[in-house]
Amino acid sequence: MLKLDFHPSGRHFLQIPGPSPVPDRILRAMSLPTIDHRGPEFGVLGLELLDKVRQVFKTQGPVIIYPSSGTGAWEAALANTLSAGDTVLMYETGHFATLWQKMARRLGLEPEFLGLPGSEGWRRGVQADMIEARLREDNEHRIKAVCVVHNETSTGVTSDIAAVRRAMDAAGHPALLMVDTISGLASADYRHDEWGVDVTISGSQKGLMLPPGISFNALSDKAIDTSLKAGLPKSFWAWDEILEANRTGYWPYTPSTNLLYGLNEALDMLLEEGLDNVFARHQRWAAGVRAAVNAWGLEVQCQDPDVYSPVLTGVVMPEGVDADEVRNLIYRRFDLSLGMGLGKARGRMFRIGHLGDCNDLTLMATLAGCEMGMKLSGVSLAASGVEAAMRYFAENAPAHARDS
Image (cartoon, rainbow, N blue to C red; front, side, top):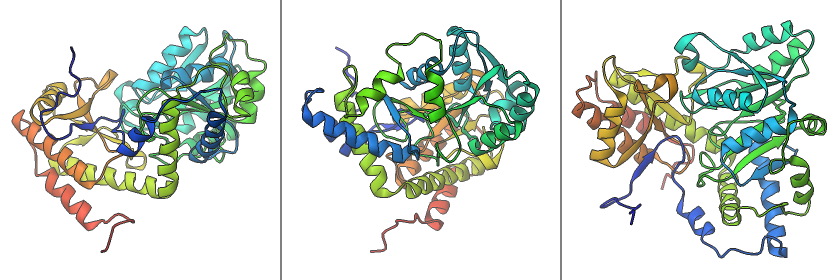
């Protein structure tokens, strides 16, 4: 029989950028007995969490909750708003933008992939001026949607979504704006309504601190109106039946009951702390990790400081060093899981997740594991990143630090 909890002592350090560690408080909530998803108690739960989840997306509109991974929410966004042969403008910022583009093609859409050439586009955020220029060329409005990734998990880049909306408005183009914030939600500031997003896609296993298995579509009125005329086939993903059932706190099919218990608890945790405080601690953790990378004399995958991700940091290995071998050694020796390089970055970098259920000492242990592992792998380091991070965290106290 496969033994999943094989760690001999202590706790495994899960420092990939999602799934992130699940807090005990959420695990306890998920362990409650399953109730009737058609019964009165469930309706109360459904209405409560549907109200609270809007606060995290910063929207007054509806948020659809699916029992699926974030990939399902990608498909739902496209299938509910588009028709076969529609052109969609998709911006390449990394591996997950590429996968979304591949999905669009498989659904019978015509994705146009825009981005900086070569590997450069995987080291910077969305260039809103490129989107504006392309939309200005589209005089016949063949482009029906613009699709961008907010926080690109494969590269550690958080793009400026407000700038994308400004670019679309400047071009006077009616395309829908769809944004993937699967890894950004509840870790990086995100504003569905204020930024004029039509469909926001997200998932449970990142900043929401849940296991995988829940995904989301936050909707604008324009997106809902467009869905009434869209021609792509959908049944499970269809918004109309879900929106109708949600009016009373239910779903048109069996929802993931115990994951919804966990979601309700996660929303309570985030709202009790305050979203601004949540975002501030993620920014602080990210700065401490980057201080370590800079002290090591290594490159951060993201090359634009204005769009450094608060969720993860990509660490680029020197030429000739296989990042996956380094990562595997760290896993075997120190029981520490790091994210691998994906797509164009495969073998060139590893990713340190600093999101969700985390603290300074968690990250100090993570950085110590990285530093020891790189030294054992023969990577030449300029100085101690651990000491640099220690200084940063000691000199920059969190806003909620206890004085007594």
